[in-house]
Image 1 (cartoon, helix red, strand yellow):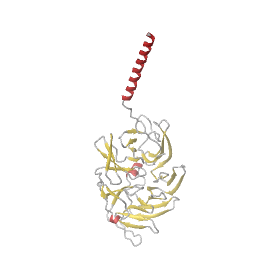
Image 2 (cartoon, rainbow, N blue to C red):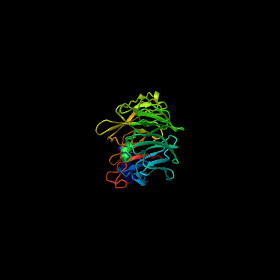
Image 3 (cartoon, one colour):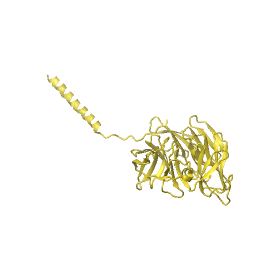
Image 4 (cartoon, helix red, strand yellow):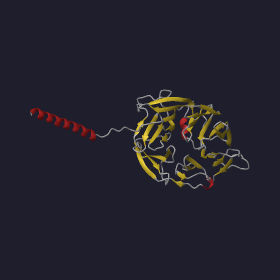
Length: 376
């Protein structure tokens, strides 16, 4: 009888201990895991006159480290096609085309070129080329067969040897495609006025080019600085020329002469990009010297939606990519910052701890510029 009582007491004591452990586990606050990166990230790293490294990062099996590979060196700028299957990049010698599925690379256009831009269907691209005191705008097919669109008698502000970050930040003078056969660019007229056909071009204007035989040009009555055009819809963000504000919204740019955009509810904010493969636009707003608000607009009615508080600020040179699910964002910033950010909670995780060396030539991830996030 005494043995049975002792056994019951031991069972009761064990039950109390186990219950206490379970209750403690249930009431213990969860340890935050943080956002996790998946897929492939192509970026430029290194900011010097000889160009940057084109790197590819992928998540390692442990989930906390990354595999890396240098795909090319001496790259000044790179831009992916809208479907993220191909990459154009410019070196001092040529424009190269890389197939992001197979890794195959081929040269397309010789020379020092810049302002690379894809047509929406991915069958053409445009670029600029400097020739002495002239700046030429071309478009080409994917076999490198190029045609001249316009030739300015004075050089624009984009320098042939500009740094990677300068090229990434200063794109206002580059062409923007609005259809497979149409693009918009800034046209400058120097000391001598040119004619194209019977047209006497207006000085310092925004121009629509229709890529027919021959190319047809149409001027707008007002010059617009285009912020971004969504390739998966008809969302356009722009500004009046030489004005930081306001940011304006247009549904399309088919007729520049009657264009009457509406103000966006984002006064004092900076546009950072569309979510990949959608027209959901994201903006950031500095709320102090050490914090930032991230929010997006509903692309149906352009109303401001919920924001996430981020406990840091970003430089004007910061380049951002937003996942197609709009849940995660990658930010590359100077001097050596590459971050993964949860766009709902604002939680920030560095790709590489400060104590670790990042995988780039020269021993560090200098001035990272994310180019494309391939979501696999």
